[in-house]
Every structure is written in C-alpha cells, then in structure tokens.
Image (cartoon, rainbow, N blue to C red):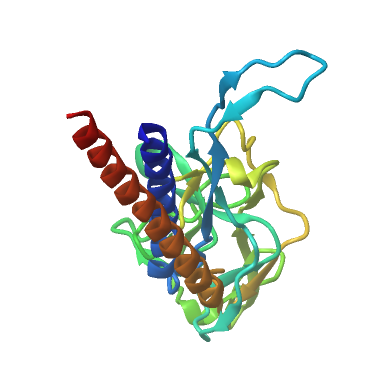
Length: 259
C-alpha cells in the first residue's frame, strides 16, 4: 500500500508538471515568436522482488512510478501575420535574430518587433521593443546616420538593409540571422529569448532563411492540441489522486485491524 501511494504520488507530480507546461503555452499563445514546450517523462528504476533461475521466467520486477524528464522546445514555424509596419520582420525558415543582451551576452529570438532608437550622439540604432540592440552579420549593433525613418528603410529577404532617399538607395548593413546545430539544447532565458549552450553549438549564419518585411511570426501554440493535452493531463492527475486516497484508506483499515 505504501508503494502504491508513492507510485501514484509520482504520477500526480509529473501530471502537474505537464499541466504547468501547457498553461505556460496557453499564456504565450499571443507572444510573438514564442515556441511551445512539451515535457517528457521517464520511468524510475524498478525494484527486483524475486530473482528467478535462468531457465525460468524473467525476474519479478515492480515499478516505482515516473519522473519528469527534459522539457522539449518545439521549433516548428509559426504562422506569419501581416502588420504593414516596415520594422516588423518575420523569419521564414530556421534561424534566429541576434540581440545584444545584458552583461555583454547575445540572445537569439524569433520576435522581429523592432524600432529605431535615436541616440544622444546623433546615431540611430535598430533595437527591439525592449531597447536591446539588434545585431548584424558580424555581431555588431546596426547603426544608421543622418535623416532616417522607418519609411525609407527597405529590408530584403536576405536581410540586407537599404536606405532610400532623393539621392538613391544605399546599403546600410545586413541583419544577423543565425542557426544552431541543435536548437533544442538552447537555454531559454525568457519567453522568446534563447542563449547558446555547449549542447546547442555556436551560432552560424543561416543560409536558407528569408526575412519578410512587414510581417511578424505568431507563436506556434496549437490551442486545440493544448486543450486536448490539458484534459488528458487533468484526468490522469485525478486518477492518480484517487489511487492515493484509496491507498490511504486501505492503510488506515490495516492499522485498525492491527490494533
């Protein structure tokens, strides 16, 4: 009875872990560039209850429940939504924008909601909406000079940026679009920020990814699937909870009989 109580408790714990992950996905359904997560579970080690001879059946094993494993990040493409804002950029294909973050570190994101920041020294910098600089193909902030606004900026599908005025069209730089050997090993810093790890490998230039100006990538959360998974997880949690209650009642009855 103690074993069944413990096993059911592990089931409740992992189902709660799954419910939390689903809740986080649902909360970020409107977050630009958000990638959904899916936890996986692993069986705990079995206890050998009876060792049988080689010519007989296999040893009698009893499981000890389950435990939470890794949380997988699902990097499938989200739908593209047209905004007509010339500084809204979406990526079509694998890869990430690079952003200069705190403590001199770089983070990577699919959120292409950008703006122009006018600096005190007269420079104009391409930033994300939180004021962090967007980086170019060399890992440097993208800086403009002179009279510039989003209306005279054109960003091509290869990430190249051009300033157009009465004198012509002038190259300003190229957005840094990076991919990783194993994106699933990226460290999640915030909802849409990721940081390179030893497992992910170092960032390399993306070759087959297009930049779409005037669009944003929506989250890849599938609400129908999330609600289905939520119902399944809640039912599994309830079933394990009933096992705990039943095991507790049986333990009480056994104790009363001993008395």
